[in-house]
Length: 389
Image (tube, rainbow, N blue to C red; front, side, top):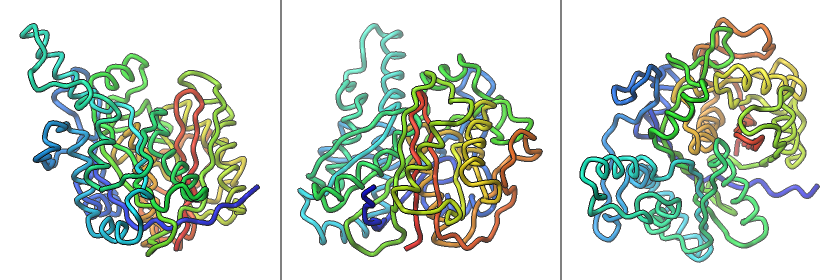
């Protein structure tokens, strides 16, 4: 197997129910403070991870593209202005890619437009399908705000959507198509996903409790995360490997033995030439549903044993779907940079079928490598291996 050179991650930013900045999100994780709560606008009992902070508005030529999704993009990029400036100084704009993941795109905006249509018999005059609904809309805004003129595309593979851009960046840089990439994902809460998961009877009525014997479903959230990956630069951490698999076991359920998850994790380790014992922490997909948690834990135990600390951070922000992979990669970066891992909220009492080491308190730990799992509908799986710089 050809082993790609580990790539510097030179910047990252994240926002979600824990806060509107990287610093706020970090503080909540360290404190073990979750952001899930009841949202009055949801017509059934469930906890959600909504962004409560005010979002900046797009101006001038980008104003017509204004949605909640693009405003989150602007917020994230505003916190990366210095790093983006250095990135543009190092590389030609034609050699900077933008690869994003999302599942909902502008669905929340379209839902509002449709409600207006039902009441007035016509769509709002400002509504435009391309600018407000499509995947290309957020891509256009991010490319405009970053000045990137290299390849640009959006990936929509459900819960792996924003993990896969890290694999794309690795391939684009390794094959000398580009020198740098802005990657990540954004998703917002909308009726489509809330009602869809409710119809699947997959939602918990309370904040989700991954790996707990008392778990009863997942919580949905919204948010975004962006990372800067470069051929060379001032590395905060390294993107070492990305393992991918597609076992196509079932349209929604994972393989009961976690075969797809095992394959993705194994491929990440193989690509890096890394032994399981060299991974210090795993950020699990850990949705809080009975099928996912057990299947993933079987795959982890089979490959790593039961000593490595395994945490699900969905008890903090919920499942942010198309933003989850990038969000949890950013959570993993906190561990690499600062030497601690967050508590797995709500995991106690632990399911007796799950034999993993699941910390329920914030734990100081010398972390050199973190594996971050994203497991999606259709048996689509991605494992991102990050290493200390």
